[in-house]
Length: 52
Image (cartoon, rainbow, N blue to C red; front, side, top):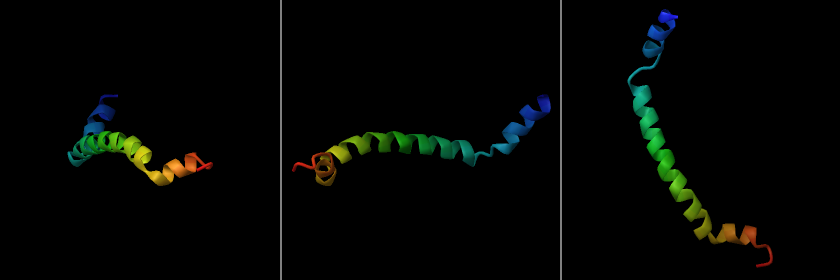
């Protein structure tokens, strides 16, 4: 078991956690930009409202 724990940190290089943090920030920004972007999109509104 202790060997597995020691191997884990070795398998996870420094660029991995750094990338994970950057991805998390990007995901948060994307998540906040997606809803307003779709609502502001006239094409999306057209798809939702076929009557228009």
